[in-house]
Image 1 (spheres, one colour):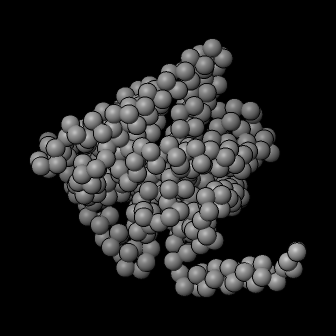
Image 2 (spheres, rainbow, N blue to C red; image 1 turned 60 degrees about the horizontal axis):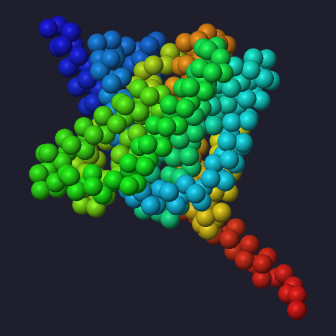
Image 3 (cartoon, rainbow, N blue to C red; image 1 turned 135 degrees about the horizontal axis):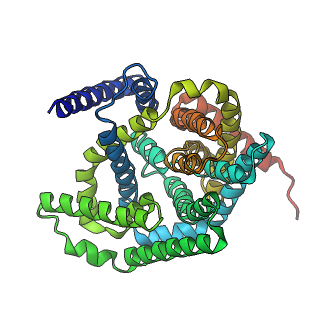
Length: 402
């Protein structure tokens, strides 16, 4: 009884405090995400007042937060749009891997780490945080922007790539050999393809099976289906985020519209818990020794991620402002990077990797939402307009060939 009482007190105080932080952040034009992370640091391991009774509850809530963020992203787009965007964004996915995974691997080798640590750090610097970016796009009201499908295409390609990367990394770290790694990878590939085929071919039937006339039944059905598919995907060594996203893709029409309205409050609640949990799992005392190299790596790979988004948006025919919004939005790393670092820690790879990865992710996830807001400032828009005017002037002054 005492444990339950303490749990209720901790959760209640935490949620109320998050509400006040979110209100303060929006009042000053800031994203609440960095504030949630700092709150987690303050009350996590090594923080001011550790939350001991509610840590397990917050961990489960954090998983639900990622799942809800991704299913809500999926509800915004149809299966046809997903397939079209994936086809057009495939070259951007290759560029993304080269520009962002290679710096992490090279950085690890420069630090004198072995090939396993290099493989892990490559994954950490490669993949952006779908959860953070989904929250930022919703907070900034950009879900309907022309560049948003490009951002989502890059994120989906990264998430699907993680379905292949994670089994390989797990096999390498565990030393199970090539055969064991290939079998795990085969299961992941079959799972992703099967879920994608069901989403594309039978999404309409799934939507017709649910009724929008009973809001309670619809909420329970959509939420339950999302958790079920996410759990099955995770059990088969595929990211639960991929499973949740494909569930959102499979739902369409009035079902998707009503589900979006009903799930939005749940998404906001559990998304805040996710960001707090990330901070709770970090001991601030481990950060100072690796802060400088983590900062250098973060600056380098945020620049390469901006270049990735810029090139992807330019290839899609997006104008300069949209290209910059795309690149800046892709800079945060998050849930996948933490998962990859956790695999390395569990297998006893380089001991400095865990604090470095934590500091790196915190730097990108705090600065990323702030960078994403830059295109909304008047001075930034003025600079972009001047740049576009200079480009037009240069183009017009070029001699014509008859």
